[in-house]
Image (tube, rainbow over all chains, first blue to last red; front, side):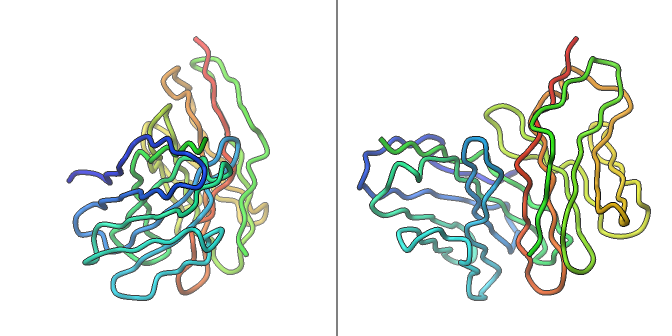
Length: 115
Length: 114
């Protein structure tokens, strides 16, 4: 597609349920990132994938959070046993280059509300 | 670890006037600096970046930013603001060698009044 695609755009769930958020990066982009944007906060880095290398999971806030990237393209962020503090907008981004000079292209985000 | 500070939660400016959105950073080694804009209910859009070279960087929609190494700043500027520039602006930095996550500031809301 022309841009980074994320689904669902909105998700309302009950505390304790599991959720899956999907990201389809720009074709040909080898690097993929997940960030979380909470109200009044900046963007919090969660995880980074680059090609076949082991992902950088240093930003995942707890072991309830996990992510995978299949075939070097689509990525799924999974949150198990959701808590109210998980409510946020989850943003996915991709980059053509894995270097530190490349800009990121963001999707429109998945807004998660945990009741 | 790298960090970014955006000292103003909100900047108000009248249409036609110049605007500045402030950003200071902290990073070891050479900084790679970025500005993004977020319109309501939309994802972040890349505006411009500084990697090396000329300290004045020009980007999308008439925006520019000035890199100042001694002051560790990368302020976003535009000579003449438009109402349509009203949005949330994020400064971001990464640096050093190897993979460096892009670290964002908390954002500055720009309101341009007619």
